[in-house]
Image 1 (cartoon, protein in one colour):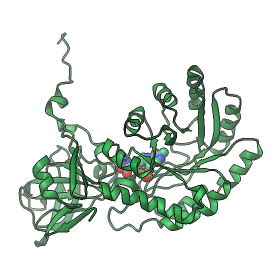
Image 2 (tube, protein in one colour; image 1 turned 120 degrees about the vertical axis):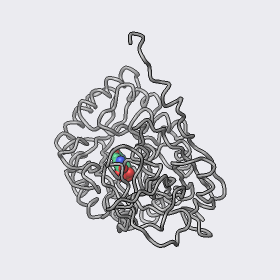
Image 3 (cartoon, helix red, strand yellow; image 1 turned 90 degrees about the horizontal axis):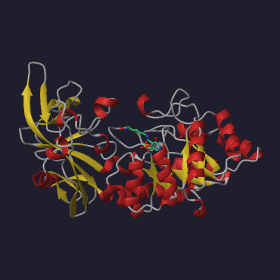
Image 4 (cartoon, protein in one colour; image 1 turned 135 degrees about the vertical axis):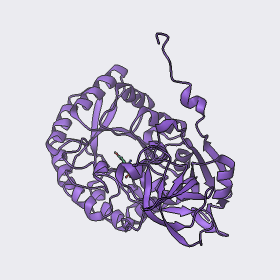
Length: 422
Ligand code: LLP
């Protein structure tokens, strides 16, 4: 069995009881299922294999900002994935996890000189360029190193996609991508550059995109644009159509992957380019839970607070995006239901995972999981309130291993420096 299921009354990660993991590694603890990650990768690549010709399969570049633990990267690398990176740190992680640089694409509006240099030296597949100043920057650095940079221009299609305005990236008001006219200008400028080769276009419209229609709307101008650019003598041999594949947090109706794949086949395949995709959340989101222990049950006149040992520093999505995450008891799951506000120990009201959530009657010391936290969970955690970063564990069937120890108080505090002049 893979994933998070009840067995003998206890919630398990694959075949391992979560009670055992809490006992061994403590809480709060991120727990991931390798099997779920593999299954997600396979579901997306199978959908493409079924709809697209054999010789036109996309390069799936996992957007590792979602979860960049080396063990998670390793599962995806071994599944055949490429990588989308947004920093030198992610490049270093990717190379260490064994990704072939030829399958790595670099995105982001603020690529630093050191990052561009590191990407060029590693020999990555391409830079997805987000502005004309960045293009000049890449040329200058590439010339200095005498390494050719292959770039695609990220088009801003001016559409609204993505579940929350903070994660929508395709509107013209957003900082991402380059407008239609500027893309032409970019190709013209690149033509005269000695160390830049412009080879295509990219687009990423946002996260949690639920309908093929949203993708269609964003990409509908693509065939005409590709034709126009080719007509002007430019090379369009790569199209990177981004990420945004949604997962279930509550009761959302998911994107129909086969309809999406069919749309890619109908609209993108005829353009006769290499196809790249950048799925992040889809690969790992439902593959992880945040395991936490109940510290106190605090009853007031108005509410029942379930105070758990995980807090907004461990998982910021609920307070940052008003994001919904399912919460489940690990044991005694059949007890009568009680309405709880599930909160953490951090000293602000925003440290709330849910209000009025119906859960089986809980007691101090009981365990609960916050679900669908494999993506944008640990990687957005912080040390707020001088709380150590949580530990992470990967489960694979009957096996499990710590993949990141809980941060020690020494690591947390001892790097501060009190100057001599004080
Ligand atoms: N490609 C690019 C250029 C991106 O910026 C992103 C995500 C992805 C791919 C992957 O998108 P996905 O498939 O995961 O939707 N912290 C937020 C999500 C921020 C997404 C940023 N960019 C959250 O917790 O919902």
